[in-house]
Amino acid sequence: MNAPLNIAVADLPGTPAAPVWSNRFRALGSSFFTELPPQPLPDPHWVATSPGCAELLGLPPDWAQREGWNALQVFSGNAVWEGMQPLASVYSGHQFGVWAGQLGDGRALWLGEMSTPNGPMEMQLKGAGLTPYSRMGDGRAVLRSSIREFLCSEAMHGLGIPTTRALCITGSTQLPVRREEVETAAVVARAAPSFIRFGHFEHFAHHEQPAPLRQLADFVIAQHYPECADAAQPYAALLEAVARRTAELMADWQAVGFCHGVMNTDNMSILGLTIDYGPFGFLDQFDPGHICNHTDHQGRYAYARQPNVGFWNLHALAQALLPLIGDSDTALTALEPYKSAFPQALLARMRGKLGLRHIEDADRALVDDLLKLMAADKADFTITFRRLANFGTASGADNAPVRDMFIDRDAFDAWAQRYAERLQLEGSVDTDRRLAMNRVNPRVVLRNHLAEVAILQAKAGDFSEIERLLTVLSRPFDEATGSAASAAYAGFPPEWAQSIEVSCSS
Image (cartoon, rainbow, N blue to C red; front, side, top):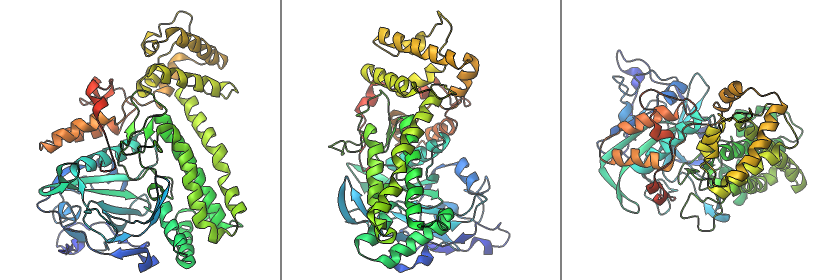
């Protein structure tokens, strides 16, 4: 393995200082990770960069081309800046409901924490080569999966959903990688306040190592949940805080029709972030039983099951924290808020999607009945809600655009009458409501066929569609986003989109 060249950018004459790095996670000790350099990516080139993520990190607009920074080499794994200390962390976890044993960063390398205007942000390279935790894998990521993760990370941020971020993709045509077919290698640079997962806690609990388990919990509390430190039972307070964040995240996913695809405990963020984009998908036709991962043969992670899986995963975290919490009753009590927090959070989001400002007891039935109609008629999830913003409450209003989404017109008309009466009850003004609804019902989401078009062009060496799509996805609620905002991005998926399959290699 060739070690990357260490580049101390700040020492180069006339070169503006590169970001300052710290390594708090590394200070936990060697039982938490293996220190190793990334494997170089031969003859790398830029595939895409995210201006929004660069701004979050406090990087200058020209960071990717800034003379002396050598950013292309650094974010391809061929060099490191001074202060970076690459490592792969160890964790364990449940995969598809079954204990999988030791896992870990099999194709991700933690570079350190970048000092940013928004606080410390951890950086990782995904696809930077073999680690001790790669198991049967090769430690690499392919261009296809890297584009999907890059775009969806930034798309989720545009939707206002907690997520890891993606700074850039680099690629190489000189490194073939075998998946279902031979593809080319790529590396994604991603950022988050922390990449710690439920599985990190499960690892030390399973191996009956209470000292590092406590050390990890204390670290997470000190760095990310300081309010828990003063609680009567800090570890139970931590569990409850994570449960509440997870409930909010599940509500966010459900409200935009997002399916994660692999909600294993090692893919669950301790901060309630969307993490590890693999076989994800946004709903086209509304189907509560939709399975976005074609290797999920039992449908464990189907759209409608995600909230319950989130709760199941929290139970796994509770079990891991039990040596610190002390008794199961206290742990279960800490999880109890999830049962009310999730439905409340989801109903609040659905009220927003319907433009309801006040709370009425019948709102849940109004929402549920609309979703049942959408499921029965296979109405497009995103387009139906976007068109609903133009719903008119006046008698005889032309609501054909949204009515035409339904095959059973009579059933929709009956629901629409209830909806109009509910809006009139709170004195809703059509024009004001339309503006409010268009701020929460996206015009564009990262549908699989949109990503597929960008991937196909990128495989041919044209990365321009990634940039255009990124621009649109960064402002998904806007009616228009420059010349790229064509009707194609917001329209119905083509028939060929139904044949797209994504799996864990995606």
